[in-house]
Length: 432
Image (tube, rainbow, N blue to C red):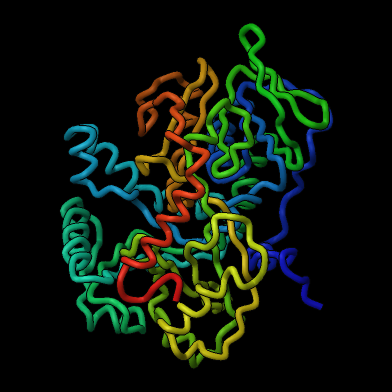
């Protein structure tokens, strides 16, 4: 019998390889670096530190990969919200180009780790398509493709006919394809990072909620609900969209909306070959974008925004299922048998934020919907920083913890903005 909502597991939980043991912390330990949060950033930090011969321990409140790292859409897309020219305008020529190289390499980091550690992670690296839904966005995707092509990236401009052929749908006026991108089974990847980090010597403890971080002389004491503590010279906090109040006011620096995903049962070969036949992933240029793809079991996945609150019933995914059929009428009658969501962390400037509340206590927050590659790379950079103390290892500057103005009202504000975007995005509506 199927498990009723809301207890039904995500598609990833039902198709990932078994997790490595990550027992709760049952005795106090001392390490060089303690990492709070067992998502991509925390696990990547631990792996990099362990490979450098530095004793590291990860404490995760649930199972590693439980948060958005194990519940995202599995799209591995390099870059961030800003194009290279915008990064140069913000950080200057040298800084902007360096940052462009960093964000442009994030997908490489993921696929390189999968290969180097022989992770049991289903993946396809066939590229990412961004579809332009209005004429104004046609010019945007042309500029974006040109900027990356000028830096040696394999890009392809797609007119309306080429989009129809590549996507298998009529929705877009044009688009561009970034050959660096691909897709993975995201929970399998998180579990692969766990195994790789453990093999390198890191300790990883699940079901170990951190309740406090206290500085005692030259070291930090990391306190847990079970009682045992971790003593560490350095601490990295990487809790993503679930900051849990550990760092004062940190939760007030982000908005953490849920990203909703619905997946069909496996498609017949007849239908599957009509949907993204080249195996690419896709998202579009709407403010409330859709993102969708086929997975390694030939299911169709449709993702997008839903209610800010936690879901109450399967109706909270109905708009995505209707949109899927509008894009691909051949999906009419195909059953959606998995529905899940996870919180993404968004900062006001749509950039990852690095904080250092006090020397040795480093915080990373803000995935901006591209966390698979971005937070993998951020973890490696954080590890290099805490290992050497050299801020040149960090791709982004360290900034103070600055709460969003009137943060308590942001849930209402975001709900109002979502309503406005649904009215103004044009074309296929997220609320269709």
